[in-house]
Image 1 (cartoon, helix red, strand yellow):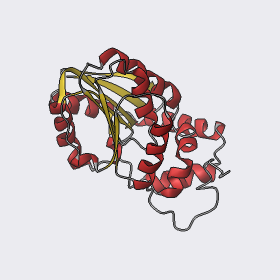
Image 2 (cartoon, helix red, strand yellow; image 1 turned 60 degrees about the horizontal axis):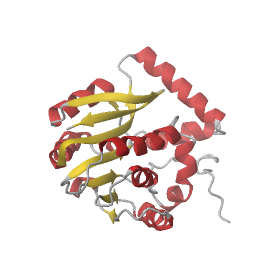
Image 3 (cartoon, one colour; image 1 turned 120 degrees about the vertical axis):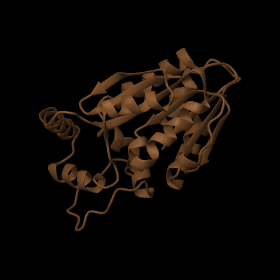
Length: 243
């Protein structure tokens, strides 16, 4: 059986290449995100709870940047309407193939499309649930506002966006403390200082976080009537935005 534990940064790399969602990452992604994002399991469980509360019959539910399909499966578990449809989107072929396998093994009968597609090319229509779990941070900053406007435009009245992101704190001391605590979390999960440093270098030019005020303001400007933080652990947060 293949080793699914994340060992991608255990050895000294020179140079450290920019992070990408290739086959090597797809093979260990479940372990990587569970040991990198504090509160990830709880966040996934609550996506099912949010889905149960806000999904509307006869609508679509989107999982944008679906990776292996963990959020897709949480949406499936939360849905009580057979008339709903799920659309899971990711631009990584390696992620999509594994997502299709995970969906095929799931017992839910909710119709689910798994598409290899750039989120920027995705059309949104008749949606009551849209989830973006740690995906917007990989979109070019100049594209984020227009994407959120299109998402808002594709939601029915009362529909919601769950936007989960690594966030930049507004105050430098707070940012430094929560970064230190996050690194402590990763050490507690078994990552070495070398792994933490090299992963951070790999992500520096790829993952560009926004501040919480920036997120909230952008969502209101995009057309949501409410946007509030429902989850935060260290410098990882999730916002519920209501159309």
